[in-house]
Length: 94
Image 1 (cartoon, one colour):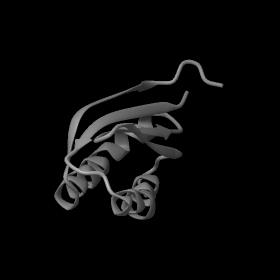
Image 2: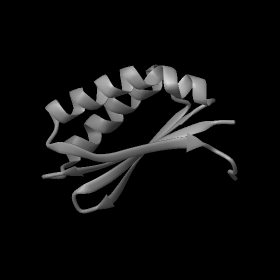
Image 3: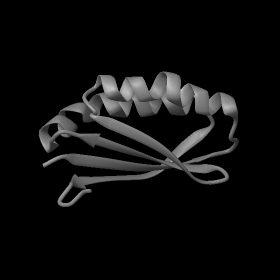
Image 4: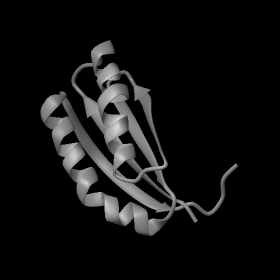
């Protein structure tokens, strides 16, 4: 079964440049550490969520140290703060 993580973020500003950086830099970085997909969803004026899918739980677990480093880099480069994160095995999908 696949495994997903979800992180929720707030930012003090939202710009087209930030969206471009997410698409051009951070999505490829997350994919490079083992994700099978990643979606970044704007959930409010200054908030977003990141949904990352992995082929299985073992792949997700092995990627977490690198994901933590990517998150740290992002918070240094951009005006954003992670509010919380969670993850789990996908038991149904369509």
